[in-house]
Image (cartoon, rainbow, N blue to C red; front, side, top):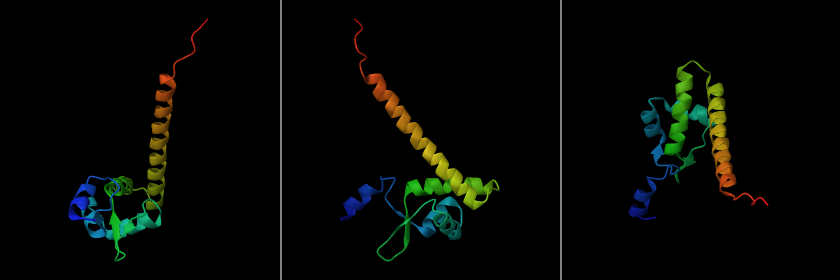
Length: 112
């Protein structure tokens, strides 16, 4: 991969561009928090060739939501479950909207 290819990937929400230290700094949290939400299987960071955790922007948004809940006093395991359920609900709503659009675009049979 060339440098130009790498820069182009930075716009990709799923590209693991952030180290654990940088991710923790951006979220205003500790590296331990990131490890804990990883252990709770909220996010699974990719690993660099050297074995270091790397996070994507999408994963950072999820971690930020978990942090909001933890800051409100919700235990980390419960916060992770809430975020997972919120993500599943959002996906189900997106799929339902697609089905509605597809059903609306189908021409009903002409009445006789």
